[in-house]
Image 1 (tube, helix red, strand yellow):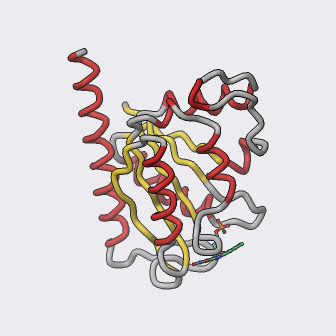
Image 2 (tube, rainbow, N blue to C red; image 1 turned 60 degrees about the vertical axis):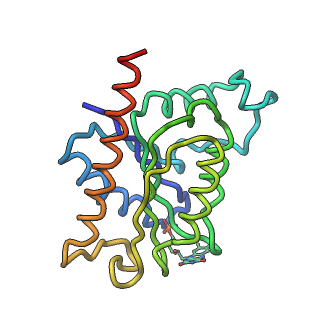
Image 3 (spheres, rainbow, N blue to C red; image 1 turned 135 degrees about the horizontal axis):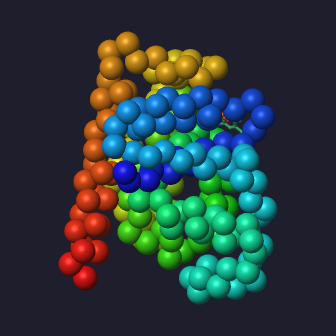
Length: 186
Ligand SMILES: Cc1cc2nc3c(=O)[nH]c(=O)nc-3n(C[C@H](O)[C@H](O)[C@H](O)COP(=O)(O)O)c2cc1C
């Protein structure tokens, strides 16, 4: 089975990010994925504190090495992010900045949530992840109050959000298969 890591980007004590992640995780587990949750609230990376540039891959700190291994071992990644002040929360930027090579060609999907489906957060995140050469395959946005209650329950009576998520997971899976094919030929 391919490994899908789901990054929980919000870290505040009362966050609903873990509930949205639970919804994503349940669907991914029902499909072809072995799911691993990378909760930035638990991982608790300090503000970027490496001496060398991430491009050199010369990670000295144990927390950087652990974070690099988690991303390197992931076949694909889903970033679950709220929108904070028309962008994404700071911990996910910090987590991205720590690494470089590990993001290269990594298939990544985005699941945003907020008043406008976190469209600004997802657009900004896609720009940053593309800069570090990740392969951002797409995303979906859950909007208050139509698709998500304020306390974090996904409202999906029509099944539209589940269909979007399934399509995103399928696209990620295709990308992983493509990468496996390239690796087998080289
Ligand atoms: C600091 C802060 C800024 C926010 N700014 C926005 C915003 O610009 N747009 C939006 O749709 N929601 C905004 N919200 C509302 C969040 O989308 C909502 O609180 C959501 O539950 C946050 O995710 P979390 O519970 O996982 O932290 C903001 C919330 C916080 C805490």
